[in-house]
Length: 130
Length: 75
Image 1: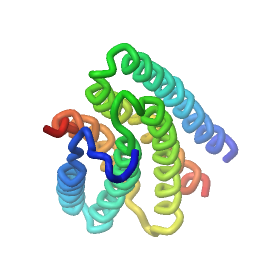
Image 2 (image 1 turned 180 degrees about the horizontal axis):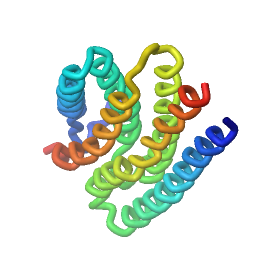
Image 3 (image 1 turned 60 degrees about the horizontal axis):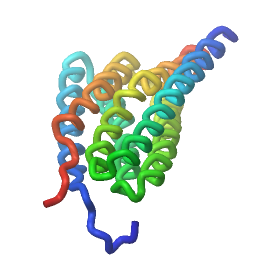
Image 4 (image 1 turned 45 degrees about the vertical axis):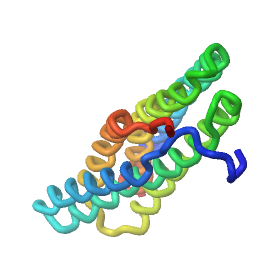
């Protein structure tokens, strides 16, 4: 798709990012009541979800419309591969570089964000531009 | 200790297998249905995007647990 071409869908990227960040901060504050380390680990766990997913959404909506269906599917496969690889790299980096880390807080926040992400995208979905 | 690596390999491998089969079906159905009704292409793309998020939930959590096993339990 050339840069001058008008987009078909209006993507609520900023809304998604804002709500996800708000959820992460909320979960971090809940874990913060246990310890400072748990709150910090929970925040990092949420970020591990948000960054690869933002890339996935950006990559998946690079092409739109029935004419570019094959490019949409190809980009979806590539985006998913990169998303899983980024998640693995981020987790490895956190476990190697971040010492100490509160593992239950990290994995719990990540799992909650993974479960809530599709729900968020269901309720605030891309709308066709009028 | 070797069992930990085998466990991590099984988690990542089976997760990737499931995600691969799921994404193959999802992409194939998206192409098929877009070819049948091109006017629904945008709606189908949005639904495929949401389904992709549901589909990779378990492999993503599996990757997290596998990295924990490799770098914390075995490390």
